Image (cartoon, rainbow, N blue to C red; front, side):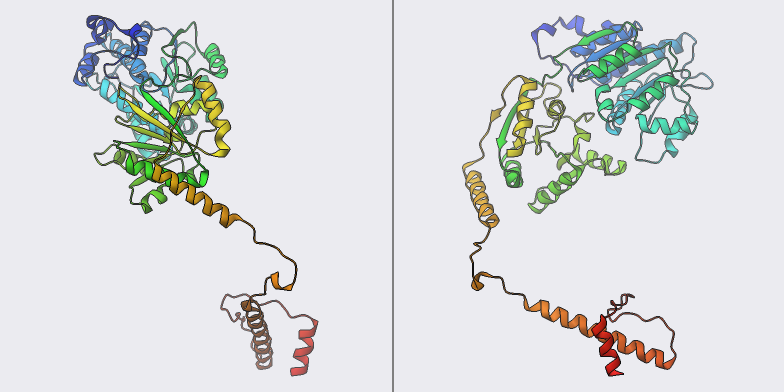
Length: 487
C-alpha cells in the first residue's frame, strides 16, 4: 500500500494522488497519515470513489496491490459518517453488525482485521474476527459486546449462526475477498446460506485475483449494476519478480534446495510444497542440514500457525515451508525468494504463490523445481503466463553431485542377474529355522502347562509365554497325537 506504480499509465500529479482528494473522513485520514501512506495504488484510485458513492463493485487485481485498503477505507468512511449523522454508530446502544467481510483463510481474515484496526483506530468503531481452529469463546464474547464490522471465514460463521450467536439482519455492506479462492475451497454452499441471511438492500463488494466464469455468474446474481475494475490482466504476475526454473529429478530436489538456500543471499524465503506431509518432510531435511525451517499448513493448529508467522516476521526468520494455505492472504514484507519445491496442479495457483514476493515495489525472485513428471504442469503455467520461464542451471559442484546421486540411484535400482542353476538361487536364512524352532517350543510349553493346570483344578486365565495375553494357535492333528503319547 505504499507509494508505487508499475506503469506510466497510472502516473499522476502528487496533488491528485493524495488520499485526501477522496474526501475521506478526518479520523481515517489521520490514521493513513500515521502509517506514512501518501499515494494510493491503482486499484485504490479506482475503487475508493465508487465504494464511497455506495455502488456495488467487482474488482480484479493481482495480489499485493492493496485490495484490502481499497475496501477498508471507504467502508470505514461510510460507517463513520452514519455515526456522525446520528445513525447507528459506535456509541449507539445495541451495537449491530453493519459490515460483513468474508475471507477464505484464517490468515487473510486476521490480516483484514489488522487493517481495520489500523485504519479505524481513531473512529471508535469496533470489529471482530472469527475463524476456526481456535476456541470460539473469546469470539462469542466479542460478538455479545457488540461490533460494527465482522470479518469471518465461512465455516466458523455458519457454526456461530447455527448457535444463534450472530445476527446478520442489519448488514449494510457485504464484502467477499478472494472470492475465487473461496469457491476453490468448496465454500459455495456456505456462501449461499450466508448471503441468504443478509438483507437484499445492501452494498456488495467482490474482490478477487482472478475472474473465472463461476465468479462472474455469482457477481451477476448477487451484485446490482456493479462498477468493474481490473487494474492488471487476470493471469499477470508481478513485473518485479524474476522467474526461473530448474529441471531436476524428484529425488534430487532436497540436495538442490539445500545448496540454493546455503549459497543465495536472501532476507525471507518461502518454500511451497504440494502436500502437508511433504512440507513436514522438507522441514526435517533442512533442519538436519543446519538450516532453520518451520512449516505451516492445514494440519497445524491456529496458535501454531500464528506463532510460526510471528517468527517468520522476526529479525531472524526461518525458512517457511508452506502448502497453498499461504499462497494468498500472507502480507509479509521483504520476502525476497519464493521457491516452488513442487509445481502446483492449478497454474493460477502459481501466480498467487509468486505474488508473495515483489510486493510494495520491492524486487523478488521466484524459483521452481520441475521434475520429469511435472513437465506438463510447467507447460500449463507458461501457457497461462504467455511466456517461457527462464531455465536456470545449478552450480558446477551441484551438477556433479546431482549426476553422481543419479548414477548411484540407477545402480541401486538395477535388478540382480537371475541366472539358472542351483548356485544362483538364494539360500534360506538361518534365522528362519531358528524362528520356527522357537515357535514350536512355545506351543509345546503352552500345552504342557495347560494339562498341569487342569490336573490341579486351576481355572485361572493363562497368559502366553510372550506375556501378551494371547494363546498360540492350537496344534494340528499330529500335535494332538504327540500330547496323548506324552500323557
